[in-house]
Structures are given as structure tokens and as C-alpha cells.
Length: 161
Image (tube, rainbow, N blue to C red; front, side, top):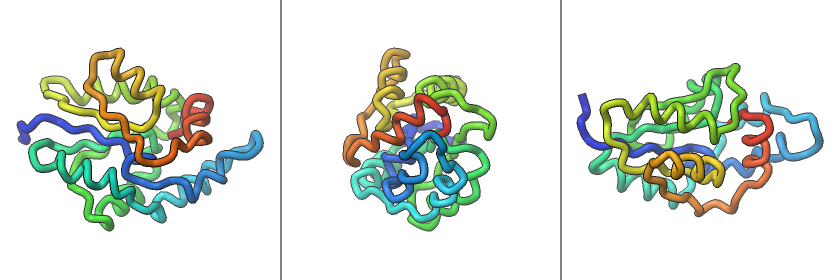
């Protein structure tokens, strides 16, 4: 069992550049979630996010905590492996869970952290960072990708990612 402290890393907007697929969820009232999530394997890696996770992996156990639904696990794991990102557990939302990420992630983190020290949570979503900070978690603001407003809006209203 790994006894190193945990570093918890978000994917979309932290490691994965999702801007190429935002058009599927940013226009009109009908969001094409199937197309949005079908593109996860085509995301580029954000250089700054890679540098952060590579540094943290030296002395932390890495856990990837994402709002992506469980049905994207295979594609997400393939993407992490293909890009040579540090190995780590992958925590995802249940396919039928529509809670906003600001509600989902603190609960998943609380469950993960039982008996473990969490040294840092890296996230780009302002609402998630606020909720985690208010709950006492140490948060690093991932601000290296221009804030993808459509993504944050749908996280709050649709609770999808």
C-alpha cells in the first residue's frame, strides 16, 4: 500500500485541453454530450498541467478526480497512458450522477481521503475550488488554460463533467 500523501488532479482544463470539443455543449439549449465525451481521446495535454503532475508524482500518490462519467473510463485511461502521464487511481462520476462538480468532488474526495493525507487538489473550476477550500482542502488553482466558460456553466447547470 502506498503511504505517500495524495495529490488529487482534475483532468479537463488541468491536464486535458478540452477547447476543441466545447462547441458540442456551448450553443443553444440542446447539448450534445455524446459528441462532447466522444472526443476525450483527442484532447491535447496542457503543458503546465503535465509539469505540475510530473512534479507531484515524485513524492505523492497521484489520484485523478474528474467529473467525467464512468462510461468514458476506457477512453480516459487510454488517454492518460498514451500521453505518458503518471499512473494513478481514476475516480469518476457515476453515469447517472448529475450533481454539479462543486457538490460531487468534495464528496468523492472525502471518501478517498479516509485515513490518508491529501496534500493538494489541483482544479480549474472556480466553484469546485471554492467548495474544496471551504471544506478545508488544500487547493492549487489551475489557471493555465483560458477559463472555458461554457464548460463551467454546464458543470453548474447540467452536472455532467
